[in-house]
Length: 366
Image (cartoon, rainbow, N blue to C red; front, side):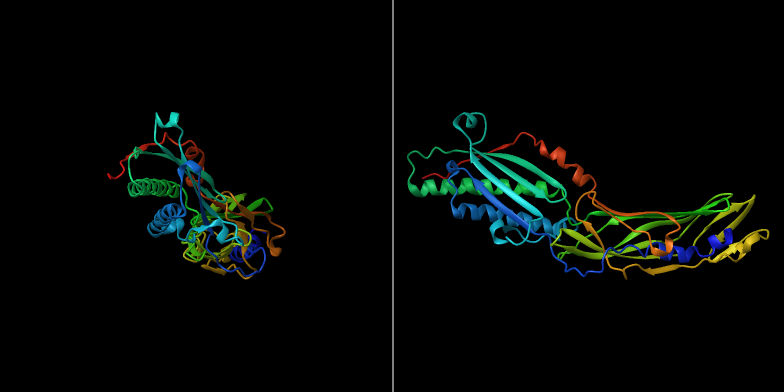
């Protein structure tokens, strides 16, 4: 019985992971939609050109961050004003609010308050605050001087808003979620329990168009317990994950392919130790049941024929890996999970921003 369980182990492993597909649909890759919005109170007196100046600074910092941090942000498109893209739900939202502080508030701080909020769907949101202190004493100034003073104030507001956006962008990496695939299948008979254990983990790095292809390191092993005990890991195991982000349902379509080298290790039956390595089976004494014919070879499997898994692009999103039809007799658990690690966990800490700093700006003379 043990021989019948051990001999087909490579075939079993091939069948084991063929169930990584949910449905065979073909998705078109798409970048993550991003928007920005600028709001201000009446006392701030922001004109359309003022808003355009602030927008340009946000866009500059946004583009710089995507360029120098492509792993985290390259898959997000350029900033768009929300009304410009009504057909797509934004994955990333940048919101800037400018208010002129009251006379009492200005006595203990800046003249203007800037609030920059970054929201990443599936990861949460965070806020950065800033104050800008300006010399608004233009009582006897002419119109040109007042205009130059106002423009200088807007430039400082734009600079501070852009800097705060850069701080927030450093806290998130929506284009590189961590993927973790886990499979455990168990079977037993005549006092022997077998388990095939697969654990793969690594980052899925989305390209500019939302597509990705990544090789994940894998720990894969064949375990024997009960009357016989031992573990035989696979060498050089890796899982190739490729797919696309689908904007229609904010989810990833993921295809998988597994490769692994030969097994190494040993198991013991009735005090007899048998070893496996380099494709050979070695045992010091004859073992009943034909176990001496135990064979080992590398694995190369295409696991995407049935179609891709669909997993929401969110922290802690998961999809089950269903049991294959040929493994109905096995006790099976399998899942694929996405996470953003410390980047997502930092949201709570970011929500409580430190006391905003003030920057003094002197208007030009007449």
